[in-house]
Image 1 (tube, rainbow, N blue to C red):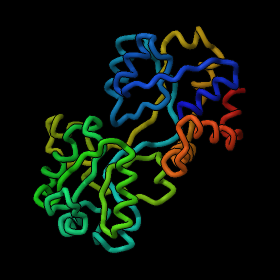
Image 2: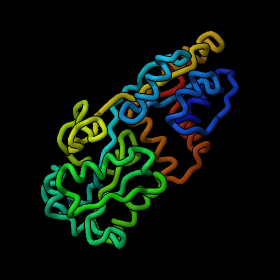
Image 3: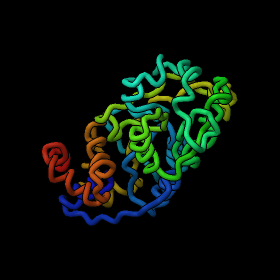
Image 4: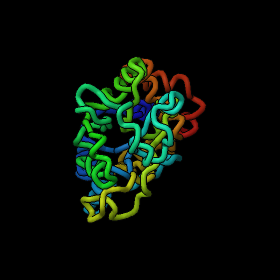
Length: 269
């Protein structure tokens, strides 16, 4: 999506530089003026750093994408089709089917494959304990997001179940993926916030943010960026070009722009 938005700026005559940075550090960098903007702020994992930078000064809200985000443990549709855990997506079904999700590294337990531990810390291990499932299930952490998609392919080829961390919008929206229904999230329900850790994840917004000087230094680009609002389908298509079709991030951005002028060109007018 960064390359898509950058291409939109370039079509309007702007020069663009792409700077890799940790998503939590990005907000301070935008606030300080080292970066100009952040194009996807996930409420569930980034809002604290986002609000802190905004309160300190130098970062301003640039609007919200037209979608609802969700990040949670879940499974591909074929887990249901093959009857590997009757009763899913209700979390209580996990009490009786862990053997169908065991892997060589899980010690005989069913395995949850989480994202890298830097993403959520011990939220998922704490949830297993809170729900009383840690005797039958264990959490393993992926080294990178690509390991999650590799696990989807491997599990299907081996005919075993898999529970992985995933999110929407993502390319899996088109392939068919179901999120597990855990006890509803509420403020303070997680162990780190004083709760019992049993709760699932919150749904949230996907915002944009810019350096406070951006509307003054680049008024046309800032106006376009504020109007810009992608749907879950738009972002899922972008992700699929990389995660399914194997394009580089840059080539995926170029292809999406070429194929969807009807979506993005109105924002640049």
